[in-house]
Length: 247
Image (cartoon, rainbow, N blue to C red):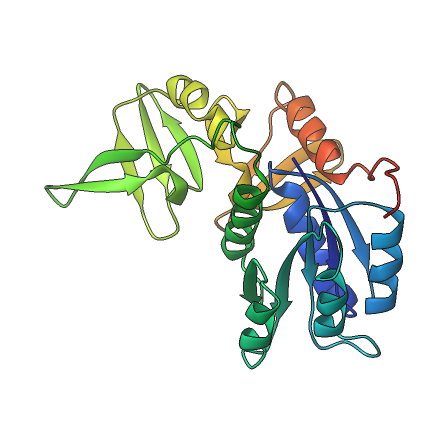
C-alpha cells in the first residue's frame, strides 16, 4: 500500500488528484501540498512512496523540487502531472516514473499508480492478479473484453452485463461468481444487482443517508447492506498518514 504526496498550487487540481488517488485500492493515504516549499516541508516530516508533482508553480517549481528529491538517499518515485508537454525530457532526466498530462483522467492516473506500485513492490511480493479476458458475442461474432476495461457489472438473472466505456456485453455468469472472482482485482459489490471497479469510480456521494457512486457517467445506488463496506474502503483511503520518522 502506497503513501503518496500530491503537490499543486491550483486548489481544484490538487483536490481532484487527491480524491482520485484515495479511491485507488493500492493507495493507503494521501497528503497534499500547495507549493514546492510546502512539499519539501512535508517530505522532511514524513516518508512517501511517491510524489505527484505539478511543474509550473510559483517559487520552487516542480523541476526544482524534483532535483532536490533526486538527491535523497532513498527518494520517492516522482510522477509529474502537468498541462505542458515541453518538460517531458527534463522529467525523465530526473528519472521520473511517469509524466501525466492535464486534464487528468482517472484511468491515466491509475496507470501511474500501477507503475509506482510495480517499482515499489519488494521482491517476493505477490503480484497483482493478471488481467482476465472475457469472451463475448458482438454482432454474431466472438469478441474479447479485458476485465480492466470493465467499469461496472449489472446482474440480469443468471447472466451479467459488463459495462465498458463504449458498450455493454451480456455474459453467462452470475454476479455473485464475478464478485468473488474479481474481488482481488479491485471490484466491490455495492448492491445485489451491481458490482463496480473501484479504480473507475468517479464520485461517491452521501445524500440524506443514502450512498451513491458514479462510474462511467452512470449513478448507481449503494444498498444499506453494502454501504458499510464501501464507507470503510473510502475511509481507509482518506485516513491521514500516521507519524513517520523524518529524513
